[in-house]
Image (cartoon, rainbow, N blue to C red):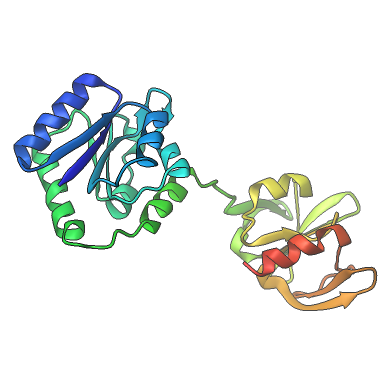
Length: 252
């Protein structure tokens, strides 16, 4: 078993090397690297190891940056001293994660898991790391909006919204039950808090949810005309400068 260690603290690296040797005497430590830059250079130059131990916080950045610049072919056991990184996603998406200082009683199960899942010519699913990185770095979007109903306050779940539109200086929600609500946001602000997977701003006055689009018609001057459900009170035209992006959004 060829093991790469990415760890910027020399005492921690020495300890990890010893612990691996105690648990797996046959393991070969191919290299110990201490930075994002050195790790990217090594991974792009040498044959992939069988397993990588990767500290999350390195001297020149976060080790997640390595995945953007190097082809990672091996499963990863993350190591961290920071509680904010101890997420359930690690258990699912990587081989494992270990809190520092590493406990030998926790290292052994992690290596056993590697042996069982990956070691016997198992094809490593790199998409699992992509899912992990997305879960860690992906932006959080609004799940609901506060609205006023008479003298009471309530909320509308984002999943229940058909579209947003601007009218008479106010921004309104039209929900899937065809109810209107005024919210204290501009459309520009909404673009920053709505998931681009589900919402698209088709012109200066409307942001629509994908599921609200009932029909799409070609329209003069290279534009598109939409029929929304519930039906909108205003003409729903995709502006010419947004048509290209709109088609790409639909074709994801």
